[in-house]
Length: 343
View 1 (cartoon, rainbow, N blue to C red):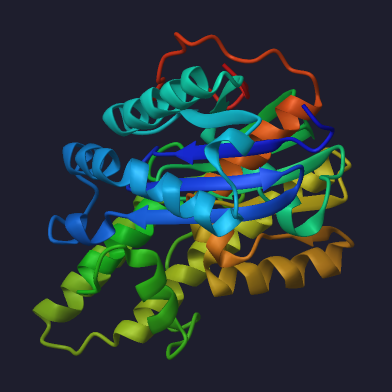
View 2 (cartoon, rainbow, N blue to C red):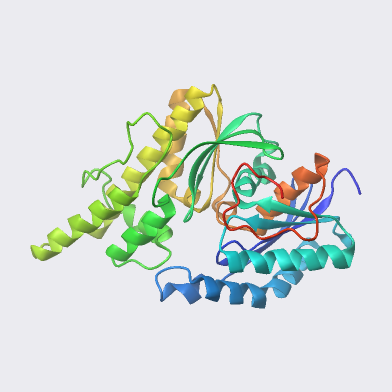
């Protein structure tokens, strides 16, 4: 195997079938098949629907990634796959496929942590990660603050959500406002026509001294505010509500992320996960990092959402670090802790 291994990564933790191919930290392909439209009419992801969609999309997505990279399967040096956390059935599809490719090709298998992969993917655009850095991961299932001494070997949890994740709150508030699923992009779009100070929504755990998050109370406050206006026969200006809700979320996220950097003496902040594609979060984070003298790294929006390239990137780190490959009997673990980078 060369110093720059070709790694094929498979991601199936939720509703995206992602297959990425990297050589070292160079992305060669990033193919995605999303089943989001199949879930939209339910207002959220249906695990069984997601699992079946992964089954149908797996082989075509692998073939599409290889074609884009200009490679054959026999050119692949290692297989990496999300082993957790995520939806059990969805994870099983990816893990089973990865085992089959690994066994059939005679190449090593690396089962990796989905959250750690969201950290590793930034290297495909901005080079090797500073050691250490602080990572803020925000998505539909996770809102976490992490200290990352070495993404291939050690991740230390600093804080997490005690109830709804930020992305989950976006989806629920979007439903209240009559916006489509998934809610994040639609709220971001609507908020551009509104004012973030129009409604003074609460900031959960804003000054509690911890690095944890809480968005359930905010979500409920938005729902009650909208319901009260509707009962009074008043018009609800969706852009203002969307902007004010969004401002409450990103205010807390960025405030706690900068606090984590200060408390641990870290000068580099990485933001990842699907909510990292939010334009207001990116702007406020940059503003506050500049003021604090902290360097900010955020992947392009296409690499923030779930994708196979992020899995391949972490797999490449593990290969380069000489980490022992995973056995072929690795399980899919829906609750895999972030401290377990590799299984």
